Amino acid sequence: MVKCAVIIVAAGRGHRFGGEIPKQYRILGGQAVLRRTLGIFCAHPSVTAVRAVIHPDDEALYKAAAEGLPLLPPVHGGETRQDSVRLGLESLKEEAPDIVLIHDGARPFVDFGVISRVIAAASNGVGAVPALPVTDTVKTAVKTADGTLKIEKTVDRSALWRVQTPQGFPYEALFKAHQQAKGRELTDDAAVAEEAGLPVILVKGAEENVKITTAEDLERAEERFASETHDVRTATGFDVHKFEEGSFVTLCNVKVPHDKGLNGHSDADVALHALTDALLGTIGSGDIGSHFPPSDDKWKGADSARFVEYAMSLIRGLGGKVLNADVTLICERPKIGAYRLQMTERLSELLNVSASRISVKATTTEKLGFTGRKEGIAAQACVTVSF
Ligand code: MG
Image (cartoon, rainbow, N blue to C red; front, side):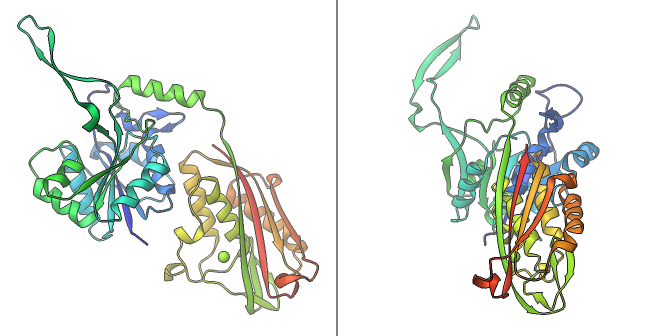
């Protein structure tokens, strides 16, 4: 798997914006602009690590905006955006990602499609920048003696593109390019890469991926949020684990005595795995394996509640709230009934929703199939999340 780190540049003071609070910390639809931006990258299934570069004066604002999100600790930026990016890149030396994405903290409407296209292109060893064609006619003009602007000529717009972020690059190459460019101000990271001779290609951007620069931009963004219909999403998950020797199984984070155990890399809690996949499904965030690869020894014997908590942190980062969850355990044995209340209570805690909105059910398959032969346990989960 390609190791993809993201640097969110959020150290600007926003002089064009005015007001006391930098624009990336202004509230948009009930959340700081920066929190929305961070939440999207945290939830993307191909992103390995996210780090913000912030202004030293914004520690408290950042702490509030980043609360509960799975982020690397922030680092402080420099004088210019370019300095901040370089410092961000330097801070990732130990992470040593294969590719790095640089994104403006004030672009909270970036979608998974744009991010995926940039990651796919940058994974091929080139720089990649999302862009849109220029559709307005473009003129050059000169100022005349009386101050009016006189058109000089019409520019051929077919070769002109408006570029956005995230801009993605092979990590080592961009870091080197930024070190070389130190002290010379270039307009964006693509320009830094171009100067160093790194090929940079364009991928399809999105009109919605605007940068909030002025107070009017924020107002327009607010209107957009207000006009969007209430967003409710449902997703399902399914998992199977087979029995092995043991004296208990863990289901819905509750130990249930049994004459067998469940085989698995973590604690093999088949119910929480199905539930995690359902949660990730509501935000298009891949599956449990993309966030917690079984190849990683870190998750050996892990308490599967951590997987649910992680998925919940991503959902919260996007402003989501679980409305209900329904889990079905499929097995002949053990009998679940005596543990149902305890399981419901535990899921209620993990999902931060009233126990009356949690359902844990069990069924057999009439002695048919692998569950009927008592070879293992299957579980399915369905959750609904409102955003
Ligand atoms: Mg599993």
